Amino acid sequence: MTEQRVYIIDDDEAMRDSLAWLLESQGLRVAAFAAAEDFLAACGADMAGCIVLDVRMPGMSGLELYERLAARHCALPVIFITGHGDVPMAVSALKKGAVDFIEKPFNDKELLAVIGQCLERERATREQRRRGTDAALRLASLTEREREVMDLVLAGKLNKQIADVLNISIKTVEVHRARIMDKMAVRSVAELVQAVISTRP
Image (tube, rainbow, N blue to C red; front, side):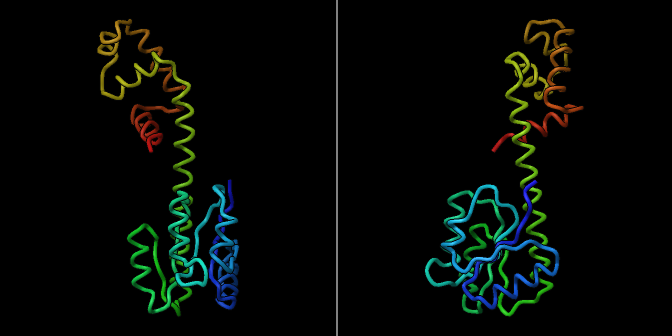
């Protein structure tokens, strides 16, 4: 399991250090970057956790970095840190999918609560993606006939109706159903539906 980190991106060294100390004191793993460009260079698909990002930085701004990450389909939730004058920029980032923004000077408890929610959300999203990938591999292992039977099961057809549609015996339908449930690692039609839905983008 990939270990989650909180990625702090802020050009203000004192702010970076105090944030890192606060988060590490709560048992969180931290990686700090002084520039958006540095994080972009280090950013990989295997990263887990969330990003705490200063809106206004020399060079590439936090907002520009956020847009670059979105273009790369980076799934890490982003919390913006803003000065008073940057609130409109942060609101625009929220509309584009950022999780939250916190104004300086911020309340430690409030920041920790938002980070906790982000980490929980990212963990759940990653788990959902992993399940979707597993289910897609299982789906790919079904034979063409098993896919036909499964589609009819998902359409709510009974074994007898499936047998009529496919011109096979009820016994054969039962065998196919059992194999489908086994290959998809599910115990009920409801679970089968969830597994198939999880494979859809």
